[in-house]
Length: 261
Image (cartoon, one colour):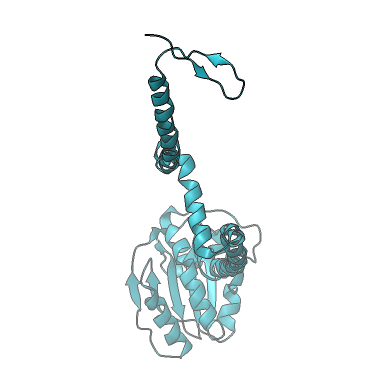
């Protein structure tokens, strides 16, 4: 076929197109189609940006949670400030409460340790009256034979202290250490075989009964109350519980002969 010659209106030159003109027109006609599809793919890519957080879950899931908190509380400044203030404001108030509670607890522990759990045999000995003075002041007397190595004596020290604080104005409390050779005569006189040994004396110094070893606290309270009220007898005149053997005492000479411990 003969080549077609088309005039050029702009330059006035002539050119002979290679190939079929119809094919070029089809290419120009088809080219917009993929161009029109591209903007359709862009929203699809934007939509795929939301599921992409599944691929990078630790990075993309956190920002939406933050934006949701911002939208709910209606303000980015509010959400950021609340996120920081929630841990800070309570901690200040809690610190104040902890400070107050700690001081109260410290005082409570100090008082409880001093009045109850912290009472030792040495404390009872320091508060006790000398034996000779107790027999001469006209009051009934409770004499406790003890030893520093006696476990039962140490366990009963807080209970004895409570009773002593309650009746100290009407009853004498005396502590005699069985390790002290000074009290050998009293140990034989009261027949001390186990400790702690509590001897209950009337205002004239006569023994009305004794309690030996670990027993319920009411036994000591009821006997001391009977002495304080001036009754003729005590409710528990001869009771023996778990005790330490007085024969196993370790004798030592006390430097101060005036010591009643």
